[in-house]
Image (cartoon, rainbow, N blue to C red; front, side, top):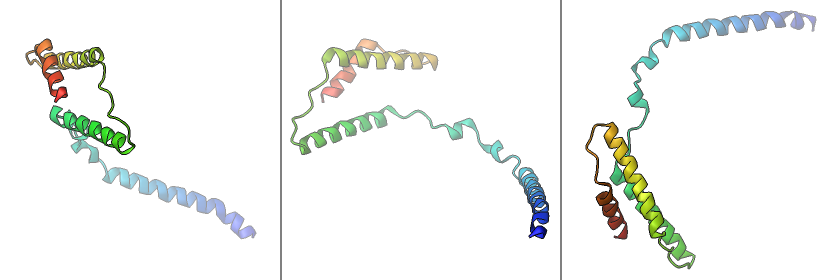
Length: 121
């Protein structure tokens, strides 16, 4: 039993030394792995508006299907003033992004009306 206790520190030092050598070799071989990755490759680009609108329509349709399956009446439409304010905020934010990219601004009133008419179906 005493022989095992005497060998334990030697085994621990040997394992740590081998691990250190392996780590140094892997570090030397793996150099430059991340050099090929650019920020654009990692971050997804902005989602196109039509994809977002489709997903929103699908979520509303799924909600209405769940309500119908439970025997509930269709959900009431949101209040007009609240919806108009939300759409206006979205259009103004879009205008700010367009201006930051050097694109011409949208007519806020016309765009709000267009989007609201699309929601009405």
